[in-house]
Amino acid sequence: MKVKIIPNINNNKSIRIPSSKSVAHRNVICASLSSGLSIIENIDLSNDIEATISCMEALGAKINVINNKLYIEGIKDFNIKDNLIINCEESGSTLRFLIPIFALFDKEVVFKGKGRLLERPLDIYKEIFDKQGLLFSLENDGLHIKGPIKPDEFVINGNVSSQFISGLLFALPLLNEDSYIRIIPPFESKSYVDITLDILEKFGIKIVKINKYEYKILKNQTYTSGTYFTEGDFSQMSFFLALGLINSELKIEGLNANSLQGDKEIIEIVRKMNGKVSEDFRCFKSDLISTEIDLNNCPDLGPIIMAIATQATGKTHIFNAKRLRIKESDRIFAMESELKKLGCNILSNYDEVFIEGKTEIEGNVVVDSHNDHRIVMALSILSTIAKNAVTIENAEAINKSYPNFFNDLRKLGIEVIEYDI
Image 1 (cartoon, helix red, strand yellow):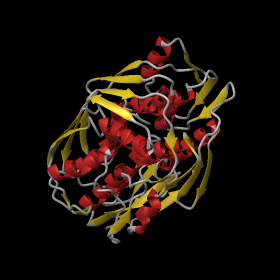
Image 2 (cartoon, rainbow, N blue to C red):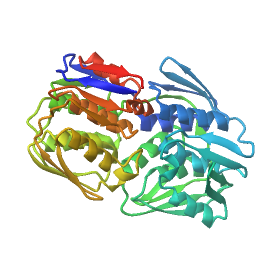
Image 3 (cartoon, helix red, strand yellow):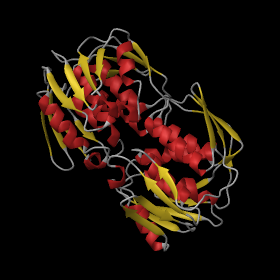
Image 4 (cartoon, rainbow, N blue to C red):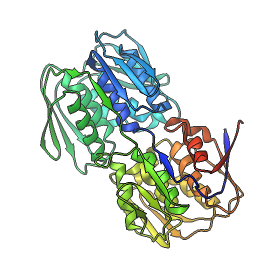
């Protein structure tokens, strides 16, 4: 699919943000591991969330979707068949969260995925499995694992992905002895682990925080079913925040002001750039200025920050950005390639990006998504202020996280024309 974005002023003035994908993944997993019925409210389905639902159903959970709620009957019998095939589609969260859970059993499991999923780093788990003498082998037909994983002291580098830590935190409470997780600093994306800890606590799981880098996971715990709400997504909010700053005023609704989501940092980042954002998430068209931006704790914000930086006076320096290179696409390469087509002045090295603004976007060009939902959204927002229409190829990547994104743009008065190819 390709889309043509027709530049226009946002004329609706308010938008409700979909629920947090990060919180939804965790709620689905914890509810599935609980005994009894859980209700997960305020769910917006996407390819990634549907992948997690499908995988937990394969483990034995019964999950029904009614309107925007999930009714999850937790797993009664933790007993899986040998050579079970688990398809994580393109969801890195699903794969990394579920490997330790499926490793609770002494049955071989084959994880499959699409795109770059199985090319993304998994070395931390391989080291753990090798240490415990367990199967962990990437073959032509997928990733083969076999447990059972044993209680241990797990030492993990904190500069690859917090998803490995969260995955262990889901599984280890179910073992028959205490375990420990020790993180080797720097501890990047710690906010995502904080979300995991918060949700685990809501589901009745006790994790003892020894210090900033060490956790004790108590044995023989039980997940507790209940009714849980999924808050709005600050990752998705960042794109509409950008629209308000570079296009016209916009009120963003559906967010939790006390959220633990790391991508909430977008608000402070744009305020450093002279962006005007109120406490109730109303954002105003602003005369943006360049600044230094550290992506250490919020790598998913990278593409939209690059788009915003093209509209800031001066040279913006983005650093600690190397993890963008191991996402659904190499997001530094993708954004540099496509922003140059739009006439933007951008240079990069492996870990940094430099953008000289302020750029007038001429449009009348074709850009590509690199099969990455965040690239689609960042380019779409920037295209709304171009002088001429911009066409985005391979725009179906949006379905990974935000299938209604183009409809929401239309609600704001932005014309989006879709073409099937």
